[in-house]
Image 1: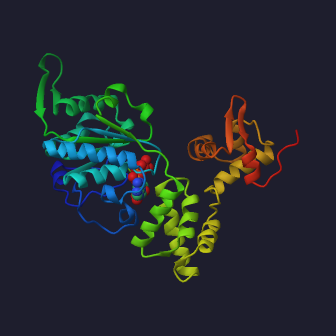
Image 2: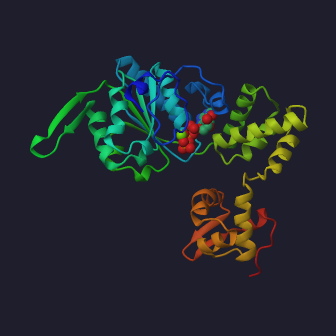
Image 3: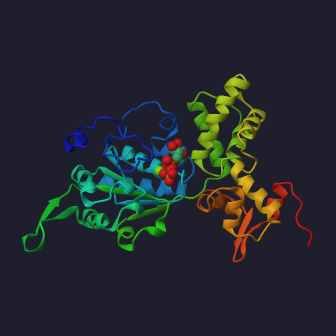
Length: 353
Ligand SMILES: Nc1ncnc2c1ncn2[C@@H]1O[C@H](COP(=O)(O)OP(=O)(O)OP(=O)(O)O)[C@@H](O)[C@H]1O
Ligand SMILES: [Mg+2]
């Protein structure tokens, strides 16, 4: 894409996960945009966010202090599992500071030249957000070091004896990084973030509050027990709570005159295979295979994957984390084992000992 087109981009940034290779998008954080579902429910200010009270409190102090001094906010790194609010924080912070944000994705920054339009485009105290920052390759990462520390980039032109270094001064800015894999970040990059925040799981009460607030935004009539039911089946993750709420709304509109009671919430979520613990069909299929075919284990991952006819990567990345977290399976040296909670949940008798 031509550079001019990049800089003249007038659409507001769409907060969300940018596919690799997306061009820089500069946005006023308060700009109104198209009314898509994700946008509608994404909080715009810190006070609209639920949970993460301690993170929010620390950020407010840092924002107030930086604003008071007239300086940019220190660089911030958010890490944590998908759907817990990393991108949300990265869009809310610039809004709190009344500044603009550029959104980039680590997977799209494959060479140093990919980074340059973003860096040269930063304005004073603006925010550059790099999602999936663990995917930034080493050669690009090195440019970030001086950019973050000294607001400067050094570009080497030519080769050998003809090589010349050009120094570019950058406007003082804030880099916000987000990653689901903090362990993959190199120490030099990690240590250049002054603020590091880990986002953890939400409680059922916090998700219940989120469902009630968002039902209001979607103009859905819902009572507290129904909101609680959606929250309990959402794996302690705001993104899933929002997804479930959208489905329940559709179901209620067609089947229950638009009003969501606990019965409607249960029936609609049962219909798409989300059970009381928030497990979906694939999760239950995994447990059933482990229990029925392998007697509850121990069983190797490959054997389970072959029997289910899915890839072992899918099981390991998408299915097992929640089952482990819910204490439905354990990983031992001899393989995966179903716990007594899993037998009970699947209503299958534990093996005789
Ligand atoms: N604390 C919160 N309060 C209210 N809504 C939230 C909160 N955290 C997340 N959400 C909602 O959940 C959705 C998903 O959050 P977000 O996109 O920020 O997750 P993420 O951590 O960036 O996930 P990923 O790792 O997949 O990119 C948002 O659109 C937002 O509506
Ligand atoms: Mg994100």
